[in-house]
Image (cartoon, chains in turn yellow, orange):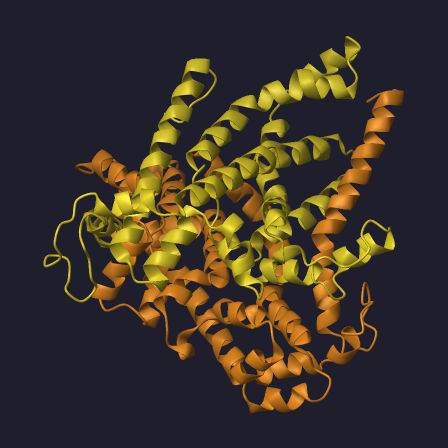
Length: 291
Length: 295
């Protein structure tokens, strides 16, 4: 019963792992794997020496740190806020609405972003003009400096609701007697959040934080590709190119397979190291860890 | 529960913030929906916010009459339905096999699976493999990409392990084979898990634009989301009209604009999900929890 699927995993996951060896070869789709000559670490050296390298590293780290810094706590805040809501109907409506974007494709989301931020008749420019925050409409998506902000905000917008599900569940598991006791001792709701709710859900928070740190070099891919593909294309790339988009550019668009694989391999190695380091720290702190 | 003054202030602030958040989430969809129902030439004069000003179904007519969009829609539906069924079948069968006690090398199989969640060869070696297997540009590939999902497999397996042993034993006494037990006993009682994972798989397949963009070059096999990338990104009318067929080209002379068409296509690509989703919400909330607890 397990054979077909096991075979599938070996073919489609393990053969590509072995395929990373092409990072050390001069691979060409037509000469094939065996015939390509070995070149050692040449592709890695080329990647580190390339003029884009530091730029890409800066973007990758900056975008993923921003995502971790803002995108990670956002669902926790939402869960804490929803927990204070006593009106069940209102709570359900907010939850239902905020879950929606998680199920919508990045293609549509990027379309919505283009439409909302449009120069002519875009609602964002419209509202800002109405309140005299800006004089003339701004072409948000073609200013490189704004790109990180837009990317991170859209990411939060898309996942905040769905991300809050886990925390809501963790909060629901807290013993209500704790709150009663705290209220007896004169703690207001605000104090109760800090003294009971947050400490009670901290193991869940830590596990998700570890997973987040392991993902630190995954700055994003679909979102970046789609949001830079519009008309103002090249302009924001100095702020938008990350390792994954670079691998795609070089590998699929420019057919530099070996070079792109080397860049991708570099990323996976660092990611795994970060995952181990984060887990180690968490275990040392003695709260929760992945393994 | 008793509320003092500071609690009431906090409540008010929280309610306001949540209302703002819900509005910010909902409005972009609503605005696009409104624009898709408004005549294009009227939209371009600006000021469409909450309601269509000059209502029309023209945009949708064009979208559905446009051969490429219609074809892409069929591809998407076919891929989602077949892909979900096949993926559910193989993933559940795999999980069922691994949930049995007394399988030789069981732990080894699990490790083999879990490793793939953290390490992978990356895009390029995968691309090379697909190319060499002659799966490039085939509908088969659209189905088998992601056929076995390790994450789902683990969720299934956890669920199967908790089923009472007696259930199977009695089926076996009645003469059921391994597969008989799986199809007649195990699958039917796994309804909620199957529903949740099928929903996630289906949404994933429905929304996937990237796999076809990289692995499919035949325009007849392109699903809707991938075509939508081309339509959303076609910044200029000329490009879009060149992409669309003659029917749309003649319509553009009337009152339809690129933006109206983009919005209508986006809605067409999204509405099926928006319609099923409220009905499935109670399942996926549970499903998301099962998933996260097994990290």
